Length: 320
Picture 1 (tube, one colour):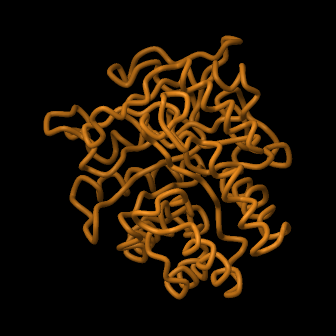
Picture 2 (picture 1 turned 90 degrees about the vertical axis):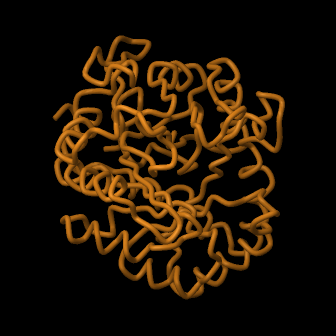
């Protein structure tokens, strides 16, 4: 099953999935770009749905403005299936006196696993407090783990997070998303997690496409890792044309079953419903048609349906 904010669903029912977005996020790294308005975030989720998606991952982990009850309300009102995230982002997102900095790996792992098994806290400021509830009164549970590292660096803070994520993964079978800076240290992350007992098959490397090196990507896919392609509509970094060419090359290398697609727009100034652009509909309306023309409908269907469903599936029984 796949654990969404409104309950567990059969993987066959998930539908086209955007593996990486944010409906709520507040970070000191993004001042003035807060996603913190339920009505506007709900309207943006509806735009994503109308662009051809049936499901999405909200990839905001602990301490960065999550609102699990609002996610559940948005999912119920839009019909968009939403998988929530637990975990801890890369160190730069947390101010020097943030409470999470004092937590050891064992404490973090227990909290991450609890969010998947029992439910997310109503407020991150009270992580051991009341659990969040959905519109029908059921608990809102996370379905994915997340961590992150810096550019060619895994700090002590981030190593603790990865060890905690590994322990939580072993306990829950939830997959782990790892934020990479320009796809650096990707093999090192997989090595660290493997040493903690986590198979690369349960890991998705976010922002892999920031380094459009098909040889690197093929080597990561050979280990079993999923490649998170989410850099579309960022021509200052990589043009969509470069990413199309990358995807063609990676598919030619035999890795089509390891690619998942998202937008990671993550800023209010880039959400239509907050007054910005291009918005969450960009991926479905403008990029996916070009990708389908380049690599074929079957390959795109696998990247949007089969691959994210496989990644997000938990083998453990519901309600464990």
